[in-house]
Amino acid sequence: MKSSSGHKPRIAMLSIEDAKKAAIAEGIPEAMAPLSIFRILLKNPPLAREVGNTLNMLLFKGNQLDGRLRELIIMRLGWATGSNYEWTQHWRVAVGMKIPEDVILAVKDWKNSKILTDADKAVLQATDDILQHGAISDAAWKECVKHVPNEAAQLEIVASIGNWRMISQILLSLQVPLEEGVMSWPPHGEKPANAPADY
Image (cartoon, rainbow, N blue to C red; front, side):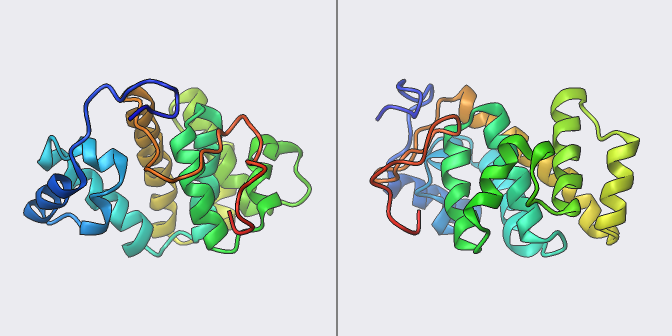
């Protein structure tokens, strides 16, 4: 199977059956096993377990940071890093959370957006700061604290940016393909003309 960049993944994927067995042995949710990234990561089961635990916590067990803000962070990272997998998969997540399409697309040029909230822009500035400078600036942090006063949620802002930046690096460096049947929407391209209405 070729990756979204047109290359074979740099580390061959386990079969879905073998990935499920490895996931069960490591206590990784079985639903993660068929994902292409885990079919590769499960060749190092302890590593897959730790990555899976962090994803599981931030996506499902944290619940401190508003899901809209988390997904806008992820979509900005997918856009900025050119990660087709991250953009395509989290487009589906964000739409499934009823985040309007124009809001999701606004991450591409968020500074000039008229529809993003001040909280949206605060976490997107934090995301760009980390991408460009390795840390959130004082000004951006002040805005994050203003709009996300919960300290536990503030920690998740930083952890979410770091986590999905790492995920993007894994996806791009290993040339991880989208799953069979998942329609690719490269972040620098247009939405597929034949995409389902809820895509």
